[in-house]
Image (cartoon, rainbow, N blue to C red):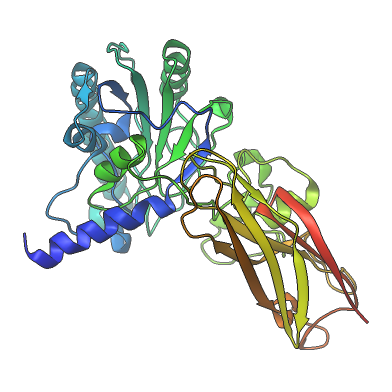
Length: 394
């Protein structure tokens, strides 16, 4: 391996935890030291490093979660389960490819064209959950990429019965259990949303497994925040309109993602901007200043926990609904703190232009700022904010 490759992987390993999102935590993690661990799930040995098609890259080697844990000194006690799952997954892949070829032949097109971007759903399985350890980890993975929409079916957007059964069983059996999401998009976690520990690892490239081991042991800490709302599939009434290959109808209007859920008051599983850490933070009172056409919001962030970490401060604005339809609120600015030790504080100033709050009026063929009150909120997610001030535009 060339030196530039070594340097590149080191950079990725250092930066990747910034995008790992701790969705739920009861304080059971990180672990103090490597030891025996029970490892399950499709992504344990078949870790997905990234998207398909143009979202894929060639790597000399991909460090799986299994390999990353072993590199860190863990003893994996579930090799028999992982071997058995390999057999199930291999058989499922053979059947999946055979079915694609059959459909392509019936349609009279080459199989490679017919199957371009096709997503292979996670298989059903029934394997004994044998293995002990200080903790258990279940790695849920999904393939996705260009050329094909995700589908609301088991093994894709939805969980399989096998996954739900095993995740719940492990959560009941182990005092320390972590659900790890090795995915590139939202999965409907409704059946397991009440788990105490959930980590969105995502798909971090060639050393995904090493990064996970670093986070699990607290050598690194998760400080990412959700850039997508995680909600039940049924929470998106317009999702069925996305499948027309000829026309895009935009029936959702301005109500996309959190803008819709926040406006109608539907509770997501995890809100836009959400993310925890191995420590806790308090965002102080905010001061707002108007400097020409720029809005500046200044606040302080204090690490109120016992470990180092970073917080992401987010500013949302509710625009008055006059002639134009407006969502309840929209993100206007965000900033991440520097690494804060326990008890340390940092002052942050977040800035955004007043014109960022403008909307396009088709009737006037112009971008406009409507008169009224602009409510500015600050917090740590779209559902965890407090009013910082009100700007009135006459």
